[in-house]
Length: 394
Image (tube, rainbow, N blue to C red; front, side, top):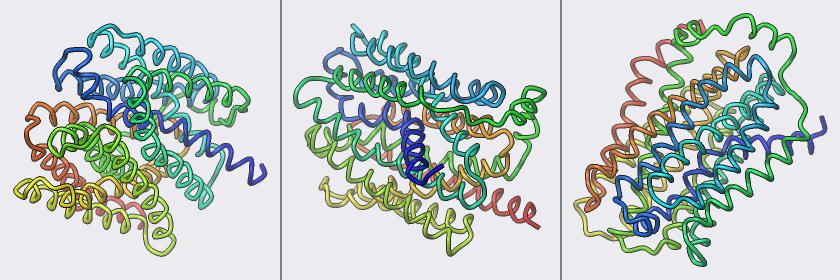
């Protein structure tokens, strides 16, 4: 492949891997608007995030092994059709019950692209080239949190939350057209081997793989707490408009892009596991600062920096932890990617409603949940990842 062709493929794969951010970030600023229009509660509004995350999680665990057996292209095409249709149906949802159910279906469809995009990257590239292009893929992925909330806020200026899902349906159609011209990337010999047996037990007992997966998962869990709680925090407590909030959300997304690039640069000079540890430690400090700001007067300047760091450092933790995990199980990259995505989305599904259940009058619950996610990631590093990785490479 030419370099231009590789970059085009990575852009499409990065977009496919971004179904999580696309389904959540474009929608985040519209939660208060949707809550009022459908005459529902904040907790039920946040449940539309939870059901989407559950769909993203469940779908990945099934599509991973399937894509290792039959290939990546056909499942991806079918999922894009379902994603587009479900998005258009959500735009017509008459009440919160329909919205919750359709968000689950949308999550199921979106889960396929998340798995197959990373597996295709693993199929196409090896060694240092894989690490470089995987970081590029995740850099494309991290661009969407920058533009998605701004686009969502823009739609709210001219309409309501339903326009956001019409846009998601259009994105699904465009990706369907692009992927239609892709060739199958799974090597025939690997497909034959996977048809014989998917070593799920061996993957789940690979301590190095599980350790990297959990560290990455809990760092991403902090991001889900931010997604679920920041719109209520910044709009209801700090008085920001939906559009202003989307701009700040985009600003934090830019930080995630920058830190993804920074992580790639740091891993060229330092050990990957060390860079991952630095990211966790700085994120913990930012979470502690955010907790302390709850006792200060509610002024935006106090929370901008800790929120920026919490979101940005996911740009180091997520791609680096995931890449290190997938490297342990390259022969069944689809299944490995599915397990990583399953854990991350289950954590997100569990964390999102917790933020709302503990109240909307203060953002202390959100700050504490973020801190706990980062602290658990650190514990897994100290108690698991460091020891198992060192033993593995000896």
